[in-house]
Image (tube, rainbow, N blue to C red; front, side, top):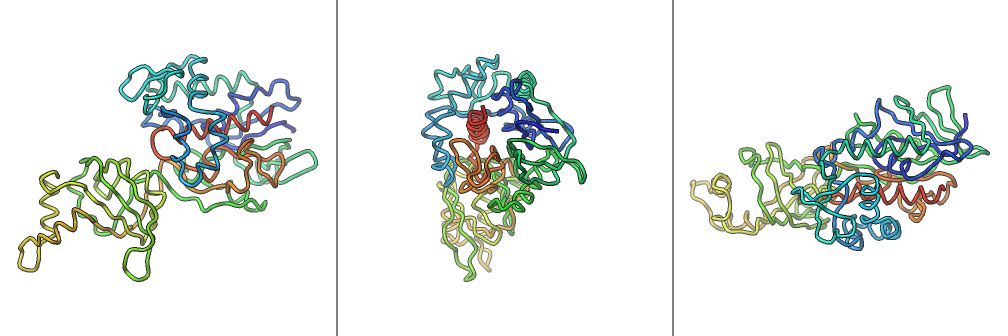
Length: 388
C-alpha cells in the first residue's frame, strides 16, 4: 500500500496539517495513523475543554514565549501567525472570543489576550479540523501503532504491526510528547526515530505542578497569590543554591501536594528533582492570607516557641524548597526532536528527506496562554506548504 503522505499521530498538529493540505489530487493520497481509538483527545482537554487556541498581540512577541527555542521558530511563526490562524477559523465558521466571552476578530487581536472559540467548546474546533481533513481526502486509521520506520527507494516504510508495512513518499511525525499517554502521546515514536539516528532531546513534563520536599501549605489548597516571583536553581552537591535556571513572576496557586498556577506551570520546564524552588512573595505579612500567616509564624518559631522575626522576614523574601518532583502529566512536553535536525521553514528534517516533524513532537514548548496550539498551527502550516 502506497501513500504520498502519512501523518503519525492524530492530535492537534496532525489535524491542522490535514486541514490545510488537500491530497485528493495526489496519486497516493494521505493517511493519518492514530494510536488510540479517536483523534484529537488531547485537543478536547485544552484550555480546560474550552480550547485556548492562540493569544492576542503581535506575533513578534510570541518568540520570547518559547524560551531558547523561540528564535529558531521565528521564521515559521511569522509566516503562519496568530492572525493567520484566527482568519482561517473565522473563514470556516468558528467565531472567536476572549476569556470573558467578548468577541475577538482576526483583524483586531492587539489586546485580545487568550483567544478561544466563542462557544468555549474545544469540540467545535476538533469537529472543524476533522471535517476539513475529510474533505481534503485524508484517510484516518485509528487503533494503529507504529512499530518501525525506515527509508526505501520510494520514500519511507512505516511498520504498523510486526508483519505489516505501508510505504509513503513523505512521513510527518506529529506524535506529540510523553504526557497524557492515554491520549496516544506516550513518547514511543522517539525511540523509533533514535534508531534512525535522529537526535532526540530528553523529553520531560512541562506546564506542570511542582512538588517540593516538606511542603507545609496543604491547608491553603485553592488559594492564589498574585505577582509572586519564583526562581529555580539547578541541583547542587554543596547544599547551596546551584546555578540559576530561570526566574519568573506571576500568579501562584497552592494545592494539597505542592505549587501550581501560571508562574509555576511556566517555570516547571526548568525544575529538576534535587534543585531548589525559591519563592519571593513580594508583600508584607499583612498582605498574605491569615491561614498562611499562621503557617509562616509556625515555621519561624525558635526552640523557645517565640517567632524569630529575622527568620520570618527571610521566608517572605526567599521561601526555599528542595524540588521532589515535577508532575509527570504536564500540559505539554519539553524536549523531543532536536531543532538542529529541522529546517523550520518547511519542518523537514535536514538529514532525512521526506521526513517532517511538527507540533509537540519537536523540542519546543511555550508558556500558558494559547502559545502551544499556535505552535502546532504554525509548524503544521509550514509543513503543509512544503508538501503541496
